[in-house]
Image (cartoon, rainbow, N blue to C red; front, side, top):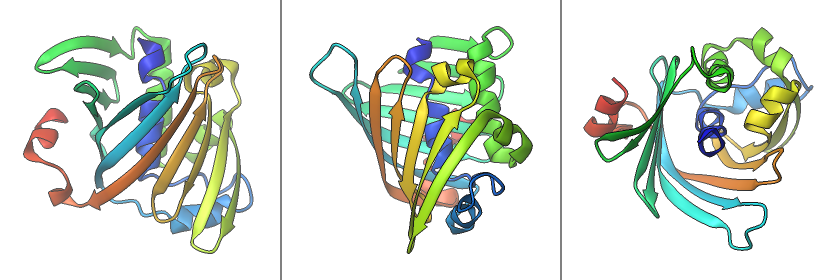
Length: 205
């Protein structure tokens, strides 16, 4: 189950969070280009290529990132599924039923992933600088950046990330240590209180 959720917190968060300003030379410029609204919602389309399986797994849905509360990642196709990520836990919902709950106090990987998530939200640059090596470039109003985990345990949990974007992240590519490859595209991004439905807001309370 960890394999299914290990990358989503960082993916969803990077759609609205700034990056460390003191890592690679262009990253401070990338951070200045990124918008950081307190609420950001949008659509995601994901293609995941698993090792040993020829046909990629396709999915799409909605996500919301709310500063100080967490991330809601709702897969709509091919099967409804919801992940709710907060500081101390990751909860997977299927309908109204809790299918899985991972507590950060009991699962070191959850603690690690959520540590990255909330370090990004809080702008804890010292923590991020310890965890990731960053390399990026800027061309006009677009940028790209690669994040490589310094620690083997984090690399195993999250993988290597490559991102492109402008004011927001547009695409994310993840190469996991297992060999699995994931590509995610974000679209229809909205910010502000009206971006999130009442149902989504209630799910993050």
